[in-house]
Each structure stands twice: as structure tokens, then as C-alpha cells.
Image 1 (cartoon, one colour):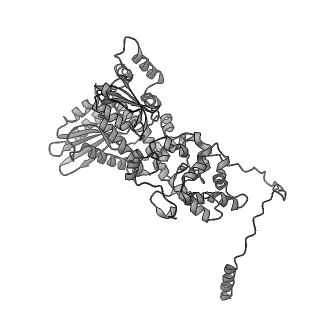
Image 2: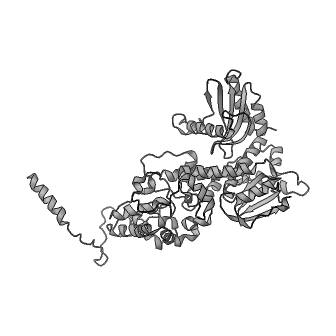
Image 3: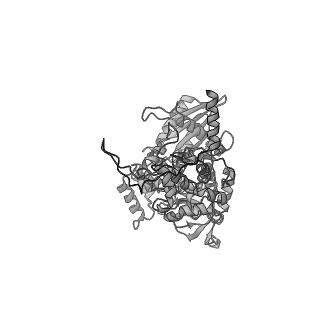
Length: 126
Length: 416
């Protein structure tokens, strides 16, 4: 049984994880979160991560013209951290992403990306 | 303790929800005729709205579940002796859905339905103590968060295009886009493809199996881009009539709604009072005044197809004096146009007798596809039909502008 809370709990076990949330990027709303958010306000970071995803999927250069070549994730690297935005693809209509904030020195980007991909897939795949 | 809460028969759904949350009530808050919020111990566990697609709509329209599977799940939930097995749990047990999918789907549906349920400033309210929904409690949401999110969603819509009437009006794509190149999102493509000139956004959402609020968002974006007709009573329309009246014979009246909001040049004529609200003010008035967006009754005359025949009249009546004075603008404009003059303009002018399509009647330029009277087909080389003199419309002789002629003559003389 892997529900939303379980998914977030596992995301927080990724080395260096500081915070994780499931965000509805239609409106930039955090459906659920765990740990801390960059500004201390999960709703503000949800709105921010939604803006980033909208830029990535709606602005032409990033949205591929080939069918089904969809944006999978966005990584923002700052001096102190990694911000990973992973699309959660459901068959039914939803616009969701999994957002994980990692400490740059404790975290490993490749490991985190892989773990988050598996988490996002497991959340919606049998 | 829940019994101590007294919900008024008519009132603000938000206030009622807050009261019930404070009393940790368990039961169903019926709002209006179509909407319902289910509470357990003061937390919202499910919500349904006639305006948003149900869980079943979402899961079956996307082919995630076969309709038979969904019906089987519903039957399981209601079966005698299996009251503890809910449809959602059954779907997860049987491997049709993952627990995560169920949670995400239900959460999305609650926020979606909650937006519509909590949208009106005042509605008929009825709280049934102890009533639960067949889906059970898959998840729970703090009512304060639900109310805040509903408010925020309204604000986001008004930031796109502050014309709430669009949410209730039939979606009619314009015949010709106002720009040479149009870029649509995937959902906008679906909306435009399905819009047949009879469906409002909420119906489109159900047909498409898309979240109601997401469709509202995209429809407002389409309106802001001038790609769909604005409903009667929409703000640019009132102002649009003034420039149209000033120009005598517009062949194809440029739809002023093509202009994005907030560009004052197009709507010029500050004499016409703008019933425009700033986004922030819109939220305040939406919940306070009857003319607000949320109350379906407030926009009945503007958008409801049922009230169609009266739409042109009432929209004119509701406009203030300068607006109604210029209301006859398009009609006189199109009659002054030449005989074949622009079916589109005529469609706008003769709105009163075309009661079947209220939206088209009130919107000058865009009409649903195929609604223009088709021109008669002629075989190549066929002679033009004879028109009896009685029927021939002779344009009234234009009095010569002597001053202008004099200036032209003077200019010509100077050229010699």
C-alpha cells in the first residue's frame, strides 16, 4: 500500500532530503507535504514550483514537438540545495508533481533523481 | 454536539461549513440542489458537485477504469453485509487502482467540487446529520483549507480574465481567430474540439473527464485570447458597441473581445461606465453582492440558455444609460451597411428575433459554426438572379460633403 503519505515519508528518507510535497500545479496548491519548505511556507513553495513547471511544459523550447516526449522532471540547483520537481502522471485527469528539496552537500543528485522517479511511478502504478 | 449547530436554510456555504467544522459535525451539507460536502468529525472527507466531474467520470472518461468495473465497485459498496467495503477500497483490493491513485483522484475531486460548492455567496443549505457518502473517508481535508483554496482559485481565475460570466456561458469558439497564429494547450484543444455551441464549461469538463476548475481556467484563457465568444453582458461588449455605432458600415465588426483585458484603447469612450472589477475587488464583491460571479442566479440573464429570449433586452436594460443609448448601434450599423452587408453584423443586430441562440444574439461578431445563412450556390456562368425593383434596396443618396469636395478641388488645382 503506497499512499501519498507513504510516498512522502519515503521521499524524506532520500539522503539529504529536507522537504517533500505533492503539488497540484493547476493552481500551485500543496495537497500534502512533509519536512520543511524553503521559505517555511509549503504553500508558497508549491506556488513557486508550479510556476517553474508551467514554464517548462508550456514554453515552446522545452516542450518537445515529438509526440509523447513529455517533460519528466526539472532540477534547480542552488548553492545550498537541489530542488527536484517530478511530474506524477496519472491516467485520470490531474496535474500533479512531486517536489523534493535536498541539501546540496548531503544529497546526491543522481541517487535522488532515481529514487524520486521510482516513488512518483509507484504512487500511481500497480 | 453536532446537533447544537443550527444551519440557516439560506446562507453562505462557507460560513455554514466553518460552523460545522467548529462543532466537529458528521454528516452531509447539501448546498443548493447539486452540491454536497460530507463531513466526518468536522473534516471534509468527500465533496460532490453537479458542476464538476465525479470520481467515476474522471476514472472512466480517461479509460483508467472500464465503466463496468466502476459500476461493479459501486455495487460492492452498497451490498448488504459489506457496508465496510467501500468502492474505493474494493478497487484497490482488486488491483484496479493503487492506493495513491485513489487518494489523488479523491483529493482532486474534493477540491474541484469544493470550489463549485463554496462558490456562491448564498445558497439553500441543508445539513443531514450522520449522512455519509458511499465512497467513505478515503482522505480528509481541513475545511478552513478547503475554503481558503476555493477563494484562491476564484482569485486566480479573475487574474486570467476578470469576467465571471464566462464560467457559466456556453462556449462558442470564434469563427476567425483575431490573430494569425494560435497556440493552444492540450486541454484548450480538447475544449475547442468538443465545444459545439451548446455546452457551458462545466458540462464540457464532464464530457471530457477533465477537472472542472482546470476547464474554467483554460476557458478564461481562451476568452482572454479572444478565441471564444464572450457571454451577453460581458464588459467589453457594452463598450464595444460605442465604436461600432460611430463607424457606419463595418463589414466584419472587429471583435473588441479580441483585445486582452486592461487595454483601455480598444474600449475607449470612458463615458460608458465599466462594470469592471479589479481582481482583488472581484473576490470581495463576489461573495458579498448578488451580482457576484458565484451566484448562478445573478448571471442567469447573462448566460443561462433558458432565459435566452430576454437576454438581449435585459442585458441592455441592465446596462446604464450610455450603454443602452449605444445599444442600438450594431443594428443601425448593419442596416446602413450595403445589401449583402456582413452576415455577422446582421446577426448581431437582429438578435431579438433569434431567440434560439441567446449568446449569438448578443454577441455581434462570432457565431457558432454554420449559423450564418448560406449564400445560394451558383453554377459557373449562371446569370445573377433578377431582383424586382420593389425588393431592390437602394442605398439612400449620400449628401455631398461640400466642404470636403472644395478641399479636394483646391488640392487638385495646386497639383496642376
